[in-house]
Image 1 (cartoon, rainbow, N blue to C red):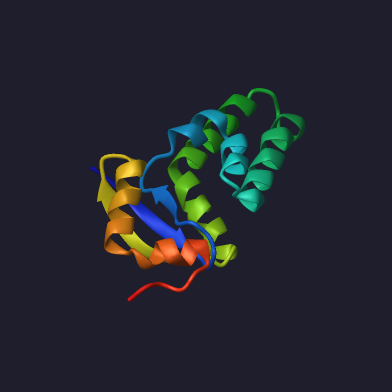
Image 2: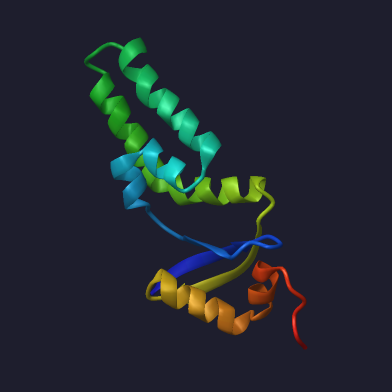
Length: 125
C-alpha cells in the first residue's frame, strides 16, 4: 500500500503526490522537479547542479552532487507539495492505494464533489 496526498483548487483536477522517497528525483534531479511543475525548487537545484562543479574543487564535486541527488530523492515529493501550496492548491485528502490510478478512483469515490469542482460546474445534491 502506498500513501498519497490529494491536492486541489477550483477548476483543476486533483493532483496526487506520493509519500516517501522519489526515485525519479534521485536519478533525474532538477529535471524531475521541473517535469512536475515545481519551478522554484527545480531552478534552484539546477543552479546548484551547474554551480557546484564550477565553484568547488574537483575532488569535492562527486560527493556534493551525490549528496544533492540524495537530498532531492528524500525531499522531492515534499518540494512538489510545497510548490502546489504556493500555487493555491489545498490538501484535501490522504489516500492509501496500490497505485496512483487506484488512489484517484478511491479519492473520487469518497469525494465526488471534486469531479464537479474540476469541471467547474455546480455539484448535484
